[in-house]
Image (cartoon, rainbow over all chains, first blue to last red; front, side):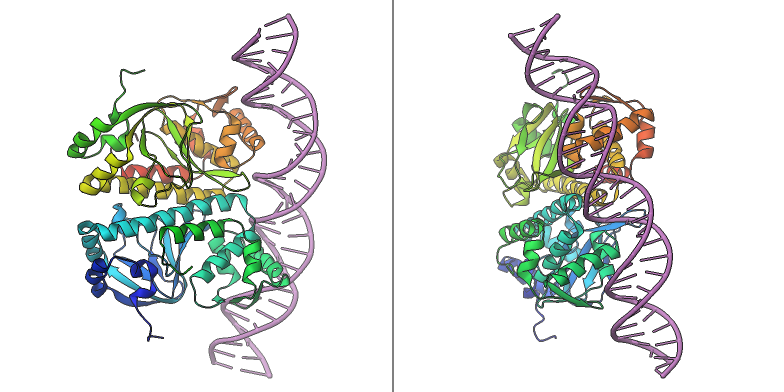
Length: 238
Length: 238
DNA sequence: AGCGTTATGTTACCCAGCATACATATGATT
DNA sequence: AATCATATGTATGCTGGGTAACATAACGCT
């Protein structure tokens, strides 16, 4: 597991200018993040920036009623904690570990020092922020206009892109809380996708067996976001 | 009309550090924006940053199907064109003039020069960007969980905050395209609000007569966004 | 005044997704 | 093997918002 643990596994870190890497990498700390860990709370201050390598973090927005919806997904393509440099002190959305795994983190003060002093880091993370905003905007429209099944396809594809396998450890219930729909709705949609031969699943594990079919059944939102991410942050996985 | 035309009417400009104002204000150009004008196109490059004073601009995201939804509203509390300094060259969402009026604009190159050279502008617009992200996130969740009537209340309140009167020149059709719902749905919700004594309306004009009632019927999203904006950008209207 | 355009009102029907309730099945634990 | 917690399957009924079609009313123009 540990043999390949390197900051370069995170594409945002990997594509930093060399001089920034040299100053920043020694301060990175490897952490193992379990399922359900909360990296940031909406409205609370944070003290680390996280760069996932093998974990996936979901940014979730919660209503007073307890209802919620995911506004973006962060894997080895990005970072959690942009609020650090935006200046408002507090995070937009709750950062919830969706798939357990590894990440690197850096202390707030060290990150900010580099951000303020050398524009290289700033330009890089602002580009990522723009990608994040695209995700958020697309999610907003998707929530309005697309069906649960379309969104499930989108979500599976987005998660798959941030993993190295085609297996996902994930219950219907958890997916439902991400999409902001009922668990039964996810079960129903997953059942359809199974009957169509796109996925298999069993008790907390989902296996994608026909990715092309998922892409075909998904709404446009998946492709739009993926293309925008690879345009803004070239050198990424896709 | 012109007697009070000053950049200070835009709160983002008004709260800039003095030295930034001195360098930036001479380059500002006053423009009159008619209803329907498109300030930026999704995916296209822009060459100006706009600072509304009496107009309101809506950031709208469009799907291939032609369906759309507003992801945020910009009035004299903010700016249009954050893509300029995010680095991706292209805008997130279409910037559509929703309420005709005045704005100041500045050339891309001049804005960027100040952004890169003096951190004062940068910190200021990054704070605004965070407020924008809060709006987008809240909109995403609102689209998922709240009724048309709740959203109409929210939208009216948000628009009202960015105007000096309690009258809004706006058809049901236009509101529907902002909220991403049918025109009939807006007509129905507006009818209810009228019967409840909250608003009057007539052929493209909406008058709010009981603001407190609107706030009571609105979803929490209005207050959450307003509070976050005034926290991040103190000295604003509210 | 008459005309066409635009804004709003209204109806009928349909369906996705909601709330609720409960059944079943699989793994983990003892 | 028995038990329990968890994950998934299914059914009922309801409702908000969708589609579609059309009626009415107000203003702008000639």
